[in-house]
Image 1 (tube, rainbow, N blue to C red):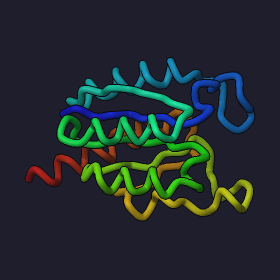
Image 2 (image 1 turned 90 degrees about the horizontal axis):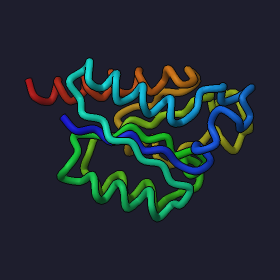
Image 3 (image 1 turned 180 degrees about the vertical axis):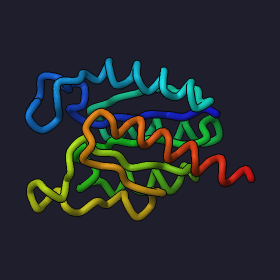
Length: 147
């Protein structure tokens, strides 16, 4: 099964941006781990990142019909983007929303996710380990659907 791991704005700065919140692991490290862990789950993982809302939407559109599901760390667009929410719905794919930090333990504007209602689940607060958890959850969801 093909899976897209899609990362949004500022995640290209992981490892150096606010390490007290986001940790010291780089995006390249996370992507390599996702690909390796995906293989253990029988998944072919493709990774992408963009700081641009439209590019993230383009990735979701392209995933439609080519990917079995998506792990999405939309970053700040989680709280602001109706367009991203609509693209998730239009993709007709199961999407797991992911955040490195626990957004509910942070500023109040981060407490509301516009995309959560159109995702199959949300994983947050586990740092880089959250990507493995998201892949496992998505894999389990997809396997349930094939039974």
